[in-house]
Picture 1 (cartoon, rainbow, N blue to C red):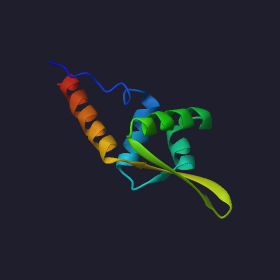
Picture 2: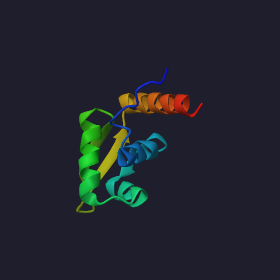
Picture 3: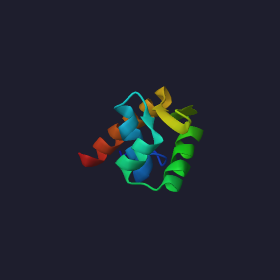
Picture 4: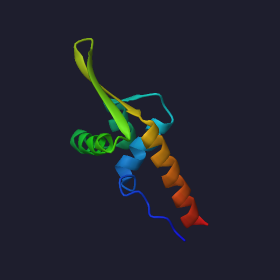
Length: 93
């Protein structure tokens, strides 16, 4: 029987963000924007959705007088990603 796919991760942009964050300690907003080819506005909205679900943490600070937004995956996000990948593998079989 097929498992339901996590609707939060089933979005292409949110899945791309989580896929990146799973392989790095943290990532800057600009890096995520470049890697996903997303607009700043769309990326901001999708990051907020991931944050609201506690899949990621967002830290805003200043670096050399410039605003910097850092994103990190949480243990909840790591588990959700692992479950999503496991569910997708069932569909592929």
